[in-house]
Length: 78
Image (cartoon, rainbow, N blue to C red; front, side, top):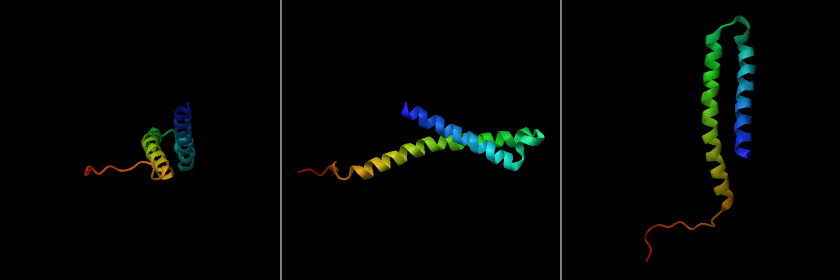
């Protein structure tokens, strides 16, 4: 449930940002379709790249706060 909420929040944030920056550039006023498609394409790329980045960042933070609980095995055991 939490992952779904985060994903929906990211998509909504990207969509809002695309609409906001699109309106600054004058995309919505003249009926030009290509700039709107371009912004949607860039937003989709950003949204798809944020999910793995957040997963990697979460793993990094988890390992950082975990400390040295797990001992690393080198393979040279006697």
